[in-house]
Image 1: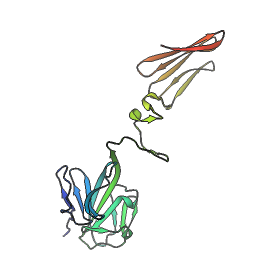
Image 2: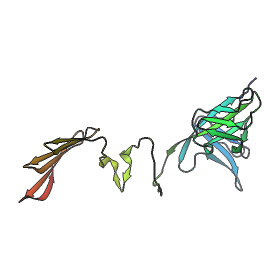
Image 3: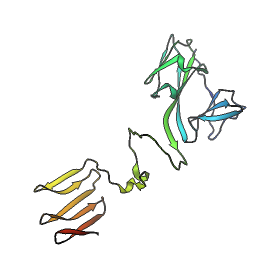
Length: 227
């Protein structure tokens, strides 16, 4: 009969295991907070949050598999990307990373556990909540595959709230002259010409129109006023 092996755990929010409640290398999980803790010793015993650290709290998933027959392959509920993001246990015993391989969501053990035993895989989802971070310095590039909410993001000290990013603009020409630009977010720029000379631009931000008027003297641009 298959048995489910569960790690030491608490379902009470905010509870962190003490050094006396965990053995060295043992893992404890708070199922209410979704956090995992490990006891370590670097000269003295301490409890650390796995995937936590100073940046914030990381999400953790736990997949549990009852082993049938000579099973070695197990399909995870989430793609860990690489082996560094998972911990594997058989009957509660930690497995070294050399004893298994990972291909997307397929975990393959080098040897099949005994029939009826349980394999438990702890997966770090890599979703991290950053709390209380004042500054982050990045020496390389930041690549984002999803969306970035720029309302509180700054570039060179200027918030992106004030920067209009060209997104699928539509250019309109009249008699070969650019007369307007319309953006996917309903913002527009309308160009007005007098005798072939640009005299004003209307900026519509979706609610309010601001006009910049170009003033010329003897055919030379002398000032730009806004209203």
